[in-house]
Image 1 (cartoon, rainbow, N blue to C red):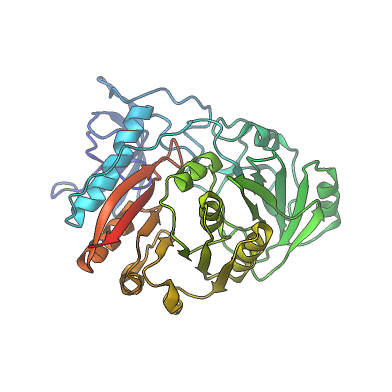
Image 2 (image 1 turned 30 degrees about the vertical axis):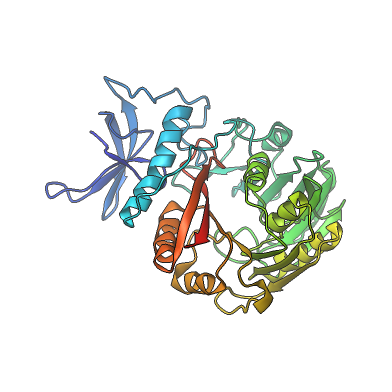
Amino acid sequence: MLPTAWHPDGEALVPSSPKDPLSTRIFGGIPGEEARIRILGAGKQQRYAHWRSADLPSPDRVLPDCPHYWSCGGCPWMHLSAVGAAVAKVGSLHAALLKEGLDLRVEALREAEREGYRHLLKLQVGDDGILGAYGRNSHTVQEIPHCKVLAPALRPLLRLPQVPVSMRVMVARLSSTNGKVMLTLVSREWTKDVEHYASLLEEDSIVYHQNRREGDGLFDYTQPFLSLRGEPWIEEQVGRAKIRVGPGEFYQTYPAMARRLWEELPLPQGRLVDLYCGVGAVSMALWGRSSQKLDIFGVEEGEAAVQRARQNAELNGVDASFVAQKMAEVTIPADYAESMVVVNPPRKGLEAAGVQKLIQLRPQPLVYISCNPTTLARDLRMLLAGGMRVSSIRPYDMFPQTPHLETVVVLEMA
């Protein structure tokens, strides 16, 4: 079978045709490489298959250096060389732009270390108390005693003993600054078994969180995070800025690449609007690089993240105002018009209402940080139609060995 494209989830794709109404997703495949496959199953629109062999392997094919590659859900592009992955990632961005009628220059991919980069570990708990990861296309938890993409300091956690069956998940975050580990235990109930298990752990910070909700959500944000040992946060240093990140709060999985991205952003001149600001990481990083006084106005929908952003501003002595509001409803102060604006939306992007709000601000410049080439391209088309022009498009490999791509676009008013 000959796949001709990449599926967004990382499989090689054989599109449907008049002769065959089902497309075929081939895990381990590479577009342009004719291959033998094993069909695993089929839905109403797609087949699912594993690559088995090829008479003429792609020059981009490498042997996955992990015994869990075929069963784990973590690294779908481990069979691609670094060069092949870089071409595929930038190619996916080009394809998304062209689909929106945008023929724009994209800079070379900022590449990264392919091993030891992940500073965040999420371990699921199986029905029998086994800690591990969901299998590929499965909710069966399997043990993963070795993981090369995980930072070495977190790897011992992969071999922890069985946990109480009332537990649901264990989340560990490693500080790239001081090497401390914050471990969050999530269970349906606080039991004597959970209490005893927590007492056996040796990490710097232990946090407990109760989540009785059904589904795959890690946390129930209506419930508190309770500190059992140490401080309930880790601290990162970006230049002269300190950034604290608590349990359940977002911070980039690959801190070294995040710092590189922030260091290459343009510097604001006096004022900064930070939309989808999270815990204020981008604001603090830009303040840390700036040699002049910087006034910051930040917006995030989640109240807990806004509280952390305010704490981070206070920690660094930064003059900042962070508000908890939906982006469609927020009013940006008039004196922040024509200031630098940073937007870092979730995968769904800005959409039409958000684009119009930005155009009205007349940002100088607008910095769009995206984790989804498809919605980025859609929003860029609307921004350009609204009178902006693109200065640069810079992709970053924030998740090596996966199809995910982080992109920074700098725009100016035309």
